[in-house]
Each structure stands twice: as structure tokens, then as C-alpha cells.
Image (cartoon, rainbow, N blue to C red; front, side):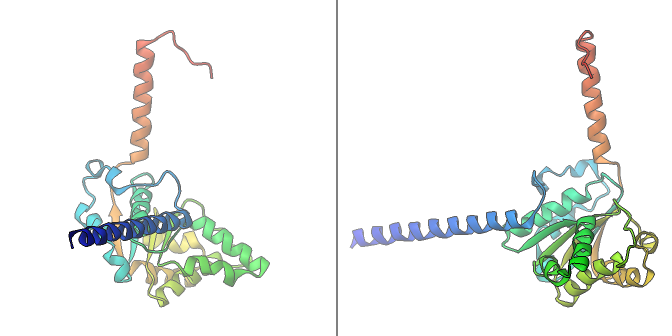
Length: 239
């Protein structure tokens, strides 16, 4: 009767609520394990008006996460402060929310970690955290020049990129280094050629040409401070 229908609806609501809670817990778990830096970057907070040359439609297209299913990698290329890290981290966060196992690292962290693995004979074990996730974000290549030590570090970077390429697993990569300068930066022409082939020639390339958002933020802060001093000329801060 009527009561039975109500009862089934009640049970159905509980089941749905439990499923939603379980999904939420999984998303939180994926975000925590992704090691994405806090505070998390949201695509909604990105100031597209500040970068009018950026292909907004392409970014929105990438935000649908179809690139993960198609095993397409993304390369964000542009000067320091233009928004590469913000956009790449936003996409990585959306991947977590979409249920994909994701991992974040900077290029220098990855190299240092694998370098330690060579010396401690734990390289294979350390490689897993970069190989296993469905999406890997390697941020900030170009902030530190890679020093060539006993192990050619470009070779270590290539190991990760090549294995993911063979496994059809996508990668998001951010750098401020243009293609011709990679061999000099990585210091190993053979590995670099192979890396360029895997990254430049099999990725969606997002070039961001525009002003530095970070510099702009800094200038706004300076203006704010100058205004404050005008209003309170006697209010000098002791520094």
C-alpha cells in the first residue's frame, strides 16, 4: 500500500545519502593523496579577463576531463606568474573530484626524490608514485636548473615521462622554458630529445602570453599601502 511506497522511498533516500557520503569521502581521500598544495586552486577563481589572449574555450574544454580518457597530455608554457600553475592545479583538482587518482609534484622535487632513490637503491619503489596515478602534474620545470651529477637527471625525468607514455597515462606539465632551450636546461641532449618528443609532440599545448598576474598582485598591494600612508601619514610601521 501507500505506506510501503513511503518506506521504499525512505530506504532509497538513505541509500542515496550513503552513496553520496561515500563518494565525498573518496574525493577527499583523492585530494589529500594528490599532494596538491594548499590553498587549492579553483578554475572559477582564475581571472581570464587579465589574460585576454588565453584560449578560454580550450581551458573549459580541458575542464571536462576528456583529455584523461583520451590519454592526452597537456603542456602549459609561459613566463613566470602568468597563471600556468593555477590552471594546471585547477585541472588536477577537478580530476580528483572526477574520481581520478592524481599526483602533484614540482620538477625539482621529482628529480631529487628519484636521485635519492638511485643512491638508496629504492628507485623502482619511488617511481611508482609517479607512474601509478591516472594523472600526474609536474609543475615548475625551469625554476631550478637541473645539476648533472653522477646520474643524468634528465634521464630520470625521461624514465617517468616515457613509462607514462607507454602506459597511455596523461601528464600535465608546466614550464617557462621554450622548446629550443630544453637541451641546455636539462643538460643531456639524448634524453632531452626523447622528452621533447613525448611532451611537445603528443600534448595539447597551452601557451600563455601575457602580463604577470603575480607582479600585478604585488603592484596592487603597493598601491593599497601607499593609499593607507596618505590617509595616515603619521602611521609609519617599524620595520
